[in-house]
Amino acid sequence: MSPFVPDTVEELQRVIAQHHRDRHPLCLSSRWAAPADSSKGLALTKLQSVIDYPHRDMTITVQTGIPVAELQRVLAEQNQWLPLDVPRPETVSIADLILDHWYGSLSAGYGTIRDWLLGVAAVDGSGRLFHAGGRVVKNVAGYDLCKLLVGSSGRLGIPVEATLQVRTIPECLLACRILAETPDGLLEAWKRVRNLPLKPVVLDASSREMALTVAVEGTANVTQQLAACIQATVTDLPGYHADIFPWNNETDCWHQMMPRTPDIDSSCLLRVGVLPSQSLRLLAIAREHDWQALALTARGTVYLHRSANTCLPADWNHFWTQLMPLNPGLQCLRGPDFLLRLAEDLRLNRPAGPLMCQLQKVFDPAEIFAAPGSNAP
Image 1 (cartoon, rainbow, N blue to C red):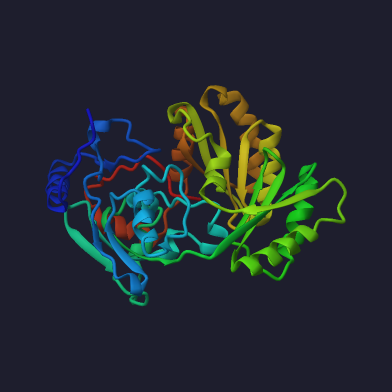
Image 2: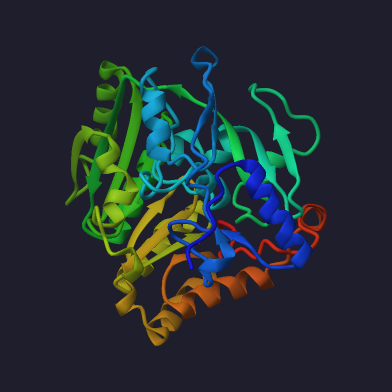
Protein backbone atom coordinates (compact mmCIF):
# COMPACT_ATOMS: atom_id res chain seq x y z
CA MET A 1 0.00 0.00 0.00
CA SER A 2 1.06 3.59 -0.61
CA PRO A 3 1.65 6.00 2.28
CA PHE A 4 -1.24 8.18 3.38
CA VAL A 5 -1.02 11.67 1.84
CA PRO A 6 -3.14 14.27 3.69
CA ASP A 7 -4.58 17.23 1.75
CA THR A 8 -4.67 19.49 4.81
CA VAL A 9 -3.13 19.76 8.26
CA GLU A 10 -6.58 19.14 9.76
CA GLU A 11 -6.84 15.84 7.89
CA LEU A 12 -3.40 14.87 9.18
CA GLN A 13 -4.52 15.67 12.74
CA ARG A 14 -7.60 13.45 12.38
CA VAL A 15 -5.56 10.52 11.09
CA ILE A 16 -2.94 10.79 13.83
CA ALA A 17 -5.67 11.09 16.48
CA GLN A 18 -7.23 7.87 15.16
CA HIS A 19 -3.87 6.10 15.27
CA HIS A 20 -3.46 7.36 18.84
CA ARG A 21 -6.82 5.89 19.86
CA ASP A 22 -6.09 2.58 18.10
CA ARG A 23 -2.45 2.46 19.27
CA HIS A 24 -1.31 1.89 15.67
CA PRO A 25 2.24 2.99 14.76
CA LEU A 26 2.75 5.72 12.18
CA CYS A 27 5.83 7.40 10.77
CA LEU A 28 6.77 9.86 8.08
CA SER A 29 7.96 8.31 4.83
CA SER A 30 11.19 9.86 3.55
CA ARG A 31 13.33 9.46 0.46
CA TRP A 32 15.97 7.49 2.35
CA ALA A 33 14.27 5.78 5.28
CA ALA A 34 10.84 4.53 4.28
CA PRO A 35 8.98 2.44 6.88
CA ALA A 36 9.17 -1.32 6.47
CA ASP A 37 5.37 -1.41 6.18
CA SER A 38 4.44 1.48 3.88
CA SER A 39 0.79 1.22 4.93
CA LYS A 40 1.90 2.66 8.28
CA GLY A 41 3.61 5.65 6.65
CA LEU A 42 2.48 9.09 5.63
CA ALA A 43 3.83 11.63 3.17
CA LEU A 44 3.46 15.41 3.17
CA THR A 45 3.78 15.86 -0.59
CA LYS A 46 0.50 17.85 -0.80
CA LEU A 47 1.55 20.31 1.91
CA GLN A 48 3.91 22.52 -0.13
CA SER A 49 2.55 26.06 0.19
CA VAL A 50 4.60 29.17 0.89
CA ILE A 51 2.67 30.71 3.80
CA ASP A 52 4.56 33.96 4.31
CA TYR A 53 7.67 35.44 2.72
CA PRO A 54 8.59 38.92 4.02
CA HIS A 55 11.86 38.90 2.11
CA ARG A 56 13.08 42.16 3.62
CA ASP A 57 12.99 40.44 7.03
CA MET A 58 15.08 37.57 5.64
CA THR A 59 12.57 34.93 6.82
CA ILE A 60 10.16 32.58 5.09
CA THR A 61 7.36 30.36 6.42
CA VAL A 62 6.42 27.27 4.40
CA GLN A 63 4.56 24.01 4.72
CA THR A 64 7.14 21.32 5.31
CA GLY A 65 6.22 19.09 2.37
CA ILE A 66 7.90 21.57 0.00
CA PRO A 67 11.09 20.15 -1.58
CA VAL A 68 14.32 21.93 -0.78
CA ALA A 69 14.91 22.67 -4.48
CA GLU A 70 11.52 24.41 -4.79
CA LEU A 71 12.22 26.47 -1.67
CA GLN A 72 15.56 27.56 -3.13
CA ARG A 73 13.84 28.52 -6.39
CA VAL A 74 11.40 30.78 -4.52
CA LEU A 75 14.19 32.37 -2.51
CA ALA A 76 16.38 32.91 -5.58
CA GLU A 77 13.75 35.27 -7.02
CA GLN A 78 14.77 37.68 -4.24
CA ASN A 79 18.49 36.83 -4.50
CA GLN A 80 18.27 34.81 -1.30
CA TRP A 81 18.94 31.20 -0.31
CA LEU A 82 18.94 28.73 2.53
CA PRO A 83 22.66 27.88 2.74
CA LEU A 84 22.27 24.14 3.22
CA ASP A 85 23.02 21.28 0.85
CA VAL A 86 21.09 18.01 0.95
CA PRO A 87 20.94 14.84 -1.14
CA ARG A 88 18.24 14.87 -3.82
CA PRO A 89 17.00 18.45 -3.18
CA GLU A 90 14.26 17.82 -5.77
CA THR A 91 12.67 15.22 -3.49
CA VAL A 92 14.01 15.82 0.04
CA SER A 93 11.46 18.00 1.84
CA ILE A 94 11.85 20.52 4.63
CA ALA A 95 10.28 17.93 6.97
CA ASP A 96 13.01 15.44 5.95
CA LEU A 97 15.62 18.15 6.44
CA ILE A 98 14.41 18.80 9.99
CA LEU A 99 13.68 15.28 11.21
CA ASP A 100 16.70 13.57 9.63
CA HIS A 101 19.01 16.56 10.23
CA TRP A 102 20.45 16.52 6.73
CA TYR A 103 23.54 18.60 6.06
CA GLY A 104 26.51 18.54 3.72
CA SER A 105 29.63 20.44 2.71
CA LEU A 106 28.29 23.92 3.49
CA SER A 107 27.78 23.06 7.17
CA ALA A 108 31.42 24.03 7.88
CA GLY A 109 30.60 27.70 7.42
CA TYR A 110 26.82 27.95 7.58
CA GLY A 111 25.87 25.33 10.15
CA THR A 112 22.83 23.06 9.79
CA ILE A 113 19.06 23.44 9.79
CA ARG A 114 19.30 23.82 13.57
CA ASP A 115 20.93 27.22 13.01
CA TRP A 116 18.31 28.47 10.51
CA LEU A 117 15.09 27.15 12.02
CA LEU A 118 13.17 29.91 13.83
CA GLY A 119 9.86 28.21 14.49
CA VAL A 120 7.69 25.22 13.68
CA ALA A 121 4.11 24.05 13.85
CA ALA A 122 3.86 20.30 14.37
CA VAL A 123 1.30 17.61 15.10
CA ASP A 124 2.05 15.46 18.14
CA GLY A 125 1.20 11.80 18.76
CA SER A 126 -2.30 12.67 19.97
CA GLY A 127 -3.21 14.68 16.89
CA ARG A 128 -2.76 18.04 18.60
CA LEU A 129 -1.21 20.95 16.72
CA PHE A 130 1.49 22.74 18.69
CA HIS A 131 3.79 25.67 17.94
CA ALA A 132 7.37 26.33 18.99
CA GLY A 133 9.57 29.32 18.31
CA GLY A 134 8.16 32.05 16.09
CA ARG A 135 8.67 34.12 12.96
CA VAL A 136 11.35 36.49 14.23
CA VAL A 137 15.04 35.86 14.83
CA LYS A 138 15.09 36.30 18.62
CA ASN A 139 12.04 34.68 20.16
CA VAL A 140 13.09 31.87 22.51
CA ALA A 141 12.64 31.71 26.27
CA GLY A 142 13.12 28.41 28.10
CA TYR A 143 13.58 25.21 26.13
CA ASP A 144 13.83 25.75 22.37
CA LEU A 145 11.47 22.94 21.40
CA CYS A 146 11.71 23.49 17.66
CA LYS A 147 15.46 22.75 17.86
CA LEU A 148 14.68 19.51 19.73
CA LEU A 149 12.67 18.36 16.71
CA VAL A 150 15.84 18.54 14.60
CA GLY A 151 17.22 15.01 14.23
CA SER A 152 14.34 13.53 16.24
CA SER A 153 13.25 11.21 13.37
CA GLY A 154 9.66 12.20 14.10
CA ARG A 155 9.55 10.80 17.63
CA LEU A 156 8.08 14.00 19.09
CA GLY A 157 5.81 15.01 16.24
CA ILE A 158 5.41 15.69 12.52
CA PRO A 159 6.34 19.26 11.54
CA VAL A 160 3.81 20.78 9.13
CA GLU A 161 5.03 24.40 8.99
CA ALA A 162 8.51 25.85 9.39
CA THR A 163 9.81 29.40 9.63
CA LEU A 164 13.37 29.70 8.38
CA GLN A 165 15.92 32.47 8.48
CA VAL A 166 17.52 32.98 5.07
CA ARG A 167 20.36 35.09 3.72
CA THR A 168 21.48 36.88 0.59
CA ILE A 169 23.23 34.74 -2.01
CA PRO A 170 26.96 35.54 -1.74
CA GLU A 171 28.59 37.36 -4.62
CA CYS A 172 31.17 34.62 -5.01
CA LEU A 173 31.92 31.14 -3.62
CA LEU A 174 35.39 29.97 -4.59
CA ALA A 175 37.02 26.66 -3.73
CA CYS A 176 40.54 25.28 -3.67
CA ARG A 177 41.03 21.54 -4.09
CA ILE A 178 44.30 20.15 -2.72
CA LEU A 179 45.34 16.71 -3.95
CA ALA A 180 47.64 14.60 -1.75
CA GLU A 181 49.36 11.29 -2.43
CA THR A 182 48.74 9.60 0.94
CA PRO A 183 46.37 9.83 3.93
CA ASP A 184 49.22 11.28 6.00
CA GLY A 185 49.76 13.92 3.33
CA LEU A 186 46.07 14.78 3.41
CA LEU A 187 46.25 15.17 7.19
CA GLU A 188 49.21 17.54 6.89
CA ALA A 189 47.36 19.70 4.35
CA TRP A 190 44.31 19.77 6.63
CA LYS A 191 46.39 20.90 9.61
CA ARG A 192 47.95 23.72 7.58
CA VAL A 193 44.58 24.96 6.33
CA ARG A 194 43.12 24.83 9.83
CA ASN A 195 45.89 27.12 11.05
CA LEU A 196 45.11 29.81 8.47
CA PRO A 197 43.38 33.00 9.77
CA LEU A 198 40.15 32.40 7.86
CA LYS A 199 36.84 30.61 8.29
CA PRO A 200 36.03 28.42 5.28
CA VAL A 201 32.44 27.64 4.38
CA VAL A 202 33.53 24.19 3.12
CA LEU A 203 36.24 21.96 4.58
CA ASP A 204 35.83 18.48 3.09
CA ALA A 205 38.19 15.55 2.64
CA SER A 206 37.52 12.86 0.04
CA SER A 207 38.91 9.32 -0.06
CA ARG A 208 38.32 8.92 -3.79
CA GLU A 209 40.89 11.49 -4.91
CA MET A 210 42.74 11.96 -1.60
CA ALA A 211 41.56 15.55 -1.85
CA LEU A 212 40.94 18.36 0.60
CA THR A 213 38.38 20.90 -0.62
CA VAL A 214 38.26 24.33 0.99
CA ALA A 215 35.75 27.01 -0.05
CA VAL A 216 35.42 30.66 0.95
CA GLU A 217 32.78 33.33 0.31
CA GLY A 218 32.86 37.05 -0.32
CA THR A 219 33.47 39.42 -3.20
CA ALA A 220 35.23 38.10 -6.30
CA ASN A 221 38.46 39.88 -5.37
CA VAL A 222 38.47 38.76 -1.73
CA THR A 223 37.68 35.12 -2.49
CA GLN A 224 40.38 34.99 -5.16
CA GLN A 225 42.94 36.25 -2.66
CA LEU A 226 41.80 33.80 0.02
CA ALA A 227 41.84 30.85 -2.39
CA ALA A 228 45.33 31.82 -3.54
CA CYS A 229 46.43 31.94 0.11
CA ILE A 230 45.07 28.43 0.67
CA GLN A 231 46.80 27.21 -2.48
CA ALA A 232 50.13 28.70 -1.39
CA THR A 233 49.89 26.91 1.96
CA VAL A 234 50.91 23.58 0.42
CA THR A 235 53.23 24.65 -2.38
CA ASP A 236 56.32 23.61 -0.40
CA LEU A 237 55.00 20.09 0.24
CA PRO A 238 56.22 17.37 -2.19
CA GLY A 239 53.66 15.68 -4.42
CA TYR A 240 50.84 18.16 -3.83
CA HIS A 241 48.65 19.75 -6.44
CA ALA A 242 46.07 22.50 -5.83
CA ASP A 243 43.58 24.08 -8.20
CA ILE A 244 40.94 26.82 -7.78
CA PHE A 245 37.37 26.60 -9.12
CA PRO A 246 33.90 28.11 -8.51
CA TRP A 247 31.77 26.32 -5.92
CA ASN A 248 28.21 25.46 -6.98
CA ASN A 249 25.52 22.82 -6.61
CA GLU A 250 27.39 20.45 -8.88
CA THR A 251 30.45 20.39 -6.63
CA ASP A 252 28.86 19.73 -3.22
CA CYS A 253 29.54 16.56 -1.27
CA TRP A 254 26.45 14.73 -2.52
CA HIS A 255 27.55 14.98 -6.14
CA GLN A 256 31.00 13.76 -5.13
CA MET A 257 29.62 10.82 -3.17
CA MET A 258 27.12 9.46 -5.66
CA PRO A 259 26.32 9.58 -9.37
CA ARG A 260 23.60 12.02 -10.36
CA THR A 261 20.89 9.36 -10.71
CA PRO A 262 21.99 6.25 -8.83
CA ASP A 263 19.77 3.31 -8.07
CA ILE A 264 19.02 4.36 -4.52
CA ASP A 265 17.62 0.99 -3.53
CA SER A 266 20.94 -0.70 -4.34
CA SER A 267 23.05 1.90 -2.51
CA CYS A 268 24.45 1.76 0.98
CA LEU A 269 24.82 5.19 2.57
CA LEU A 270 26.00 5.67 6.14
CA ARG A 271 26.58 8.72 8.30
CA VAL A 272 29.25 8.21 10.95
CA GLY A 273 30.04 10.71 13.67
CA VAL A 274 33.42 11.03 15.40
CA LEU A 275 35.47 13.81 16.91
CA PRO A 276 36.53 16.28 14.18
CA SER A 277 40.17 15.46 14.90
CA GLN A 278 39.43 11.78 14.12
CA SER A 279 37.56 12.31 10.85
CA LEU A 280 40.63 11.90 8.62
CA ARG A 281 41.61 8.75 10.49
CA LEU A 282 38.16 7.33 9.77
CA LEU A 283 38.56 8.37 6.14
CA ALA A 284 41.82 6.42 5.87
CA ILE A 285 40.27 3.28 7.38
CA ALA A 286 37.29 3.53 5.02
CA ARG A 287 39.62 3.83 2.03
CA GLU A 288 41.45 0.65 3.07
CA HIS A 289 38.11 -1.19 3.07
CA ASP A 290 36.96 0.16 -0.33
CA TRP A 291 34.32 2.51 1.01
CA GLN A 292 33.89 5.79 -0.79
CA ALA A 293 34.12 8.32 2.01
CA LEU A 294 33.68 12.05 2.34
CA ALA A 295 34.50 13.74 5.64
CA LEU A 296 32.95 17.01 6.75
CA THR A 297 36.01 17.65 8.86
CA ALA A 298 34.70 20.76 10.64
CA ARG A 299 31.88 18.69 12.17
CA GLY A 300 33.41 15.23 12.52
CA THR A 301 30.82 13.71 10.17
CA VAL A 302 31.87 11.15 7.57
CA TYR A 303 29.52 9.88 4.86
CA LEU A 304 30.28 6.38 3.59
CA HIS A 305 28.90 5.05 0.32
CA ARG A 306 29.15 1.85 -1.69
CA SER A 307 26.93 -0.59 -3.55
CA ALA A 308 24.74 -2.59 -1.18
CA ASN A 309 25.62 -5.72 -3.14
CA THR A 310 29.23 -5.44 -1.97
CA CYS A 311 28.35 -4.76 1.66
CA LEU A 312 28.60 -8.17 3.35
CA PRO A 313 28.31 -8.92 7.09
CA ALA A 314 31.78 -10.47 7.41
CA ASP A 315 33.48 -7.53 5.68
CA TRP A 316 31.46 -5.07 7.70
CA ASN A 317 32.37 -6.72 11.03
CA HIS A 318 36.08 -6.37 10.25
CA PHE A 319 35.61 -2.74 9.21
CA TRP A 320 33.50 -1.88 12.25
CA THR A 321 36.05 -3.47 14.59
CA GLN A 322 38.67 -1.03 13.31
CA LEU A 323 36.29 1.90 13.79
CA MET A 324 35.33 1.04 17.37
CA PRO A 325 38.37 2.76 19.00
CA LEU A 326 37.07 6.03 17.50
CA ASN A 327 33.80 5.62 19.47
CA PRO A 328 31.68 6.36 16.40
CA GLY A 329 28.00 7.13 16.15
CA LEU A 330 26.28 5.36 13.26
CA GLN A 331 23.22 6.16 11.18
CA CYS A 332 22.28 3.89 8.28
CA LEU A 333 20.50 6.12 5.78
CA ARG A 334 20.13 3.35 3.22
CA GLY A 335 21.53 -0.17 3.22
CA PRO A 336 21.01 -3.89 3.73
CA ASP A 337 18.84 -5.13 6.57
CA PHE A 338 21.72 -6.20 8.80
CA LEU A 339 23.13 -2.65 8.80
CA LEU A 340 19.74 -1.09 9.45
CA ARG A 341 19.31 -3.43 12.43
CA LEU A 342 22.81 -2.67 13.73
CA ALA A 343 22.24 1.08 13.59
CA GLU A 344 18.91 0.73 15.37
CA ASP A 345 20.44 -1.52 18.07
CA LEU A 346 23.15 1.06 18.66
CA ARG A 347 20.51 3.76 19.02
CA LEU A 348 18.48 1.70 21.48
CA ASN A 349 21.57 0.95 23.54
CA ARG A 350 22.37 4.66 23.77
CA PRO A 351 20.25 5.99 26.65
CA ALA A 352 18.11 9.00 25.86
CA GLY A 353 18.48 12.03 28.09
CA PRO A 354 15.88 12.60 30.81
CA LEU A 355 14.48 15.65 29.03
CA MET A 356 13.91 13.75 25.77
CA CYS A 357 12.26 10.84 27.63
CA GLN A 358 9.93 13.25 29.39
CA LEU A 359 9.10 15.05 26.14
CA GLN A 360 8.32 11.77 24.38
CA LYS A 361 5.85 10.86 27.14
CA VAL A 362 4.13 14.23 26.76
CA PHE A 363 4.07 14.49 22.97
CA ASP A 364 3.61 10.81 22.07
CA PRO A 365 2.12 8.99 25.08
CA ALA A 366 0.84 6.08 22.95
CA GLU A 367 4.25 5.70 21.25
CA ILE A 368 2.76 5.65 17.75
CA PHE A 369 5.72 7.44 16.16
CA ALA A 370 7.85 4.35 15.63
CA ALA A 371 10.53 6.05 13.53
CA PRO A 372 12.66 3.70 11.40
CA GLY A 373 16.03 5.44 11.65
CA SER A 374 18.29 6.76 14.39
CA ASN A 375 19.12 10.27 15.38
CA ALA A 376 21.96 11.90 13.55
CA PRO A 377 25.32 11.34 15.19
